[in-house]
Amino acid sequence: MLSLNLKKQYINDLVDWIEANLTDELNIDLITLKSGYSKWHMQRMFKEMTGQTLASYTRKRRLTMSAMALRLTSMPLIDIAVRFGFDNQQNFTRVFKSHFSMTPGAYRRIPDMLMKDFHSRISTQRSWVNARLAEKPELQLCGEVIEWECRFGEYIDHHNQVVAQHTRDFVRFAGKHVSRGWLGFQFSPGVNSADQQHISLFQALESQYADVLPRNVQNWTGESGLYAEIDWHGTPEEINAFTAEIYYNHLPALGVARRAGKDLLKLDLKYSTPDLLQGTFYIPVSTC
Image 1: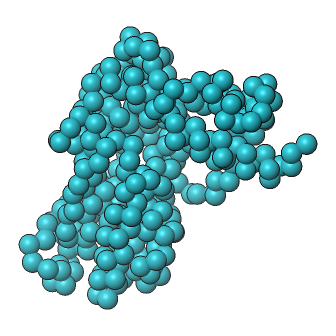
Image 2: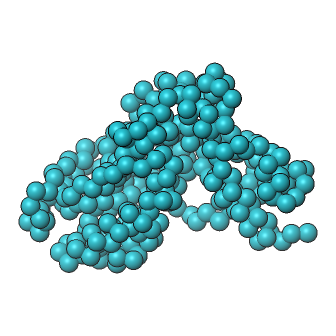
Image 3: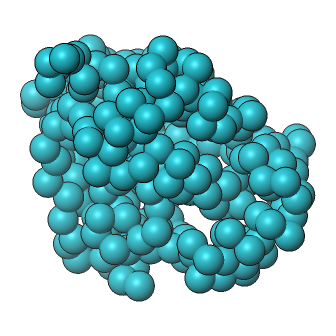
């Protein structure tokens, strides 16, 4: 009989494989083959360790990713349906509406991104995180904007080094002048092709410190309002993965919608180094 630790490791490895193959042909028989166990034993262990069936987890994760694709790309509905394992657009629309209570087209058009029905990646080793709601005043920032595009699905795992290097450079510079710095992230559909998403990284200081910045910086005002507030510490390479955790786990748990604006990471530069960061995320949200 497997120990609890071995079961956890087995489930984590299996989830890693499922997550890497959400856009491929993925069914119970294929997952069983990957697992090395019988179909009955594999499904029983998955339910025991996670509290949900394997089929339900896979379906909900694909629906969550398809919802993000609707918001972050201009891919046609049929392309999103096929990418996430649905036979046709009609079946995709039916299942999506049953889960999110609206059609994919309506979900793409609504001003705020509803997230209460998002489903997070399973982890049997998730650390405790305190996510809370707070009203924040207007924020005046100035700094440099760095922009690029990537294929949908590649930002988290394949562009973490890009974000990490820019963050390290910013911390080295800003830490010499101020005790607090800000990173602002904004994601939207790309313009180069339908399956691209656009990433905007804003490296900024509060406006009263503008004199320490190079010329030709951009000014930006963050509106007052409701924010999800989440303390965080980690390496620059972990920013992207934690952003995904915020969207797929913490915001849905709060039952909020993501409203327009930048995702902000306030860095405490007194306690941050280029290799280990400490700060707080602020995500603009609205109550559903």
